[in-house]
Image (cartoon, helix red, strand yellow):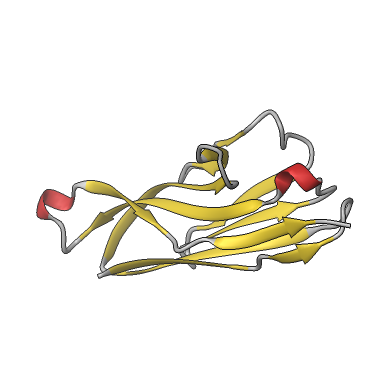
Length: 123
């Protein structure tokens, strides 16, 4: 069984900072990509940032220069440091990990999603 769990969300004022954490656990052979997505009410889920196992990163234009994604492969964790937060950053943030599990046929890499953590930026 594979689990992906986020933490670190909360209420913050505009201009403030939050650090989100995501931990993957279970019957994991290898994690390829890990990333953060967000979804605000009435909007489509969008990619915020992603990172490969080799350290390549990608960011949405709206968060470049403000957010930083990082990984600790040994701990099977990914983090999202969010600085200079804006009200438009308010959303449920989801962690996604692409995982090859020993419990899955042929070790097929599959997407595993966390339950989401609420980030609210408001004055």
